[in-house]
Length: 372
Ligand SMILES: Cc1cc2nc3c(=O)[nH]c(=O)nc-3n(C[C@H](O)[C@H](O)[C@H](O)COP(=O)(O)OP(=O)(O)OC[C@H]3O[C@@H](n4cnc5c(N)ncnc54)[C@H](O)[C@@H]3O)c2cc1C
Image 1: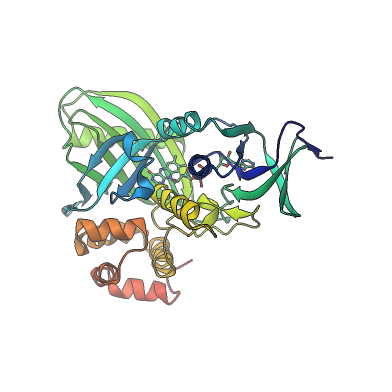
Image 2: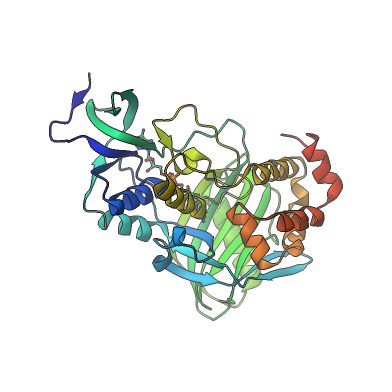
């Protein structure tokens, strides 16, 4: 049976989940001073990792901007045929530490009640919600925001990766160019590339990333990174300073129910074809707190459809991935590329992208002919 928390007044807002979206939302709600706010999260460990995202200088990314580990005006896609480098005038590609950002948010919202717990239900009652926690506690709140990530459907394509932050004993990296995809690695386990963020000439995040339904054992990614570094920086010694790993579903996630208003991954912030959600979440929360209403997805319906077509192509013809991503990069300039990746891009950019891709393959996938 649920028991009301005796010391809890009715809240203006209860935020379910204290991850990227929940903490960002609570921080912004607290700044608006519209009444007491609580964030409820089980408090499981959240290992540090890097969030990469495109920043056009907008207010929606103001909270994150000071935490940049590094930022690049140039990014590259590499395959055996060469290197496509895109330069942007209006966007930075930034990297921030998830732990630094989340710790900052937690530490700078003293008015927000940060509760440990698992929300089991939220039911409407006069003037708001009753929020029931799994341990029997109950809260009352005028609004509820739900950031529980939805479970991915069975069998979806996954983006799975492991990365090392490395220090090399020689200045081997080009610190001006982030490598988004380097396909000069084994393609046996699925669409596989190295993501390399050079924080300086000696320091970088080097990540082995695969798109496939099957996650690999940790040692597999380690072998891939070690092989890559040995092949491309053969004379440099490597020291690993930290590691990160993750799995992101590459799919349109459909939640089976929502407590109040969905936010974050639960509100379709994720770009299904790339696994990017960070800047989409920041924009979604900034919009929500300014305009009210529901949370906007990470992209519009056309881009969501384009993402689905690309995923169908990758499922049906994974061996074509290096060519497809290289051609996509070559079709765009840095600004158009970043605009598309952020979501809500423009038609000229979309048309240039479409015209640069292998037409027959994408047409067949658009008509449903290249797998799921
Ligand atoms: C390792 C990794 C690296 C990533 N890198 C990038 C990147 O470089 N760029 C990018 O744009 N995106 C990236 N993403 C994708 C995305 O930005 C993150 O997944 C982001 O954390 C999603 O935010 P969220 O708030 O929606 O979900 P989460 O951050 O996962 O937060 C959800 C929270 O809800 C809590 N919760 C769940 N159920 C309940 C319940 N019943 N009651 C209360 N709380 C509950 C969970 O404990 C969790 O803390 C990455 C994801 C991962 C996993």
